[in-house]
Amino acid sequence: MISLICRGESLGHIKLLPKVNKCVLVNAFQKELQLTDVYNYVKDCELYHVRSLGSECNGMNQYYNKLNFKKVVLPYINECLPNDANNKTRHINIPITNLSDVNKKDMITSKRYAYTSPTAGMDALLYVVNELNAKEVNIIGMDFYDNSGYHTNSFGNNPADKSKAMMYGESTESMTNFLTNFISNKADIQFNLYTKSNYNANLENLNITRITW
Image (cartoon, rainbow, N blue to C red; front, side, top):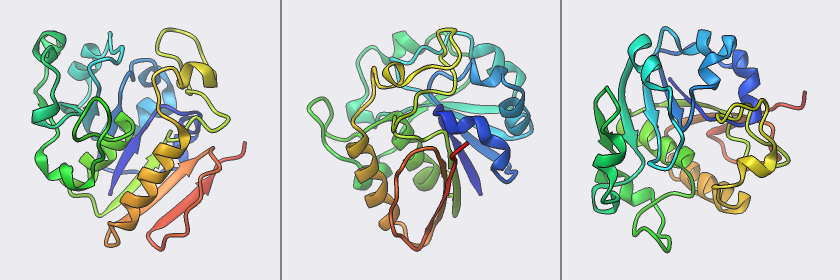
């Protein structure tokens, strides 16, 4: 069992998740790691950080040193890796990799990339399933900007409203459609989604815990 931890408002209820040995964190997460409940949940875990080149992750190196981070994962396959990747990652002090081609079969095409996913959170989900080989996945903080913002704003404000959350994000529909298709194609894997969104899909291998408080 692996937990995928995104930055939506449902993250504030991370104590609902069962304890695990591995966690994957998504994008700018330095402010979230300052929160007691989040830090306590991940502190004894093997950690992976999926972060796009455009995410503001200043301050993460202190956590790479302090916690059990194994690697940074850039959410691009080799042929779609931006040319400035080396320049933008030279300050990172742990191993860096990107997504392997095994993820191609689950990806979509966009105007910018021949192979991609709607968001880094979805790329991280592919990584959890296709490369870390999870048989059960807990997901929290994935709220699809559905009447929800980020639990914190890594630029210093707490919380971050919906407009801030959507600044660089894709449409709710593109994310939910991608997620439903992905889960439906992974019938042998159990997905447990904890969310504040109205997302719903009638899939046997998906349990949804709706957070309404």
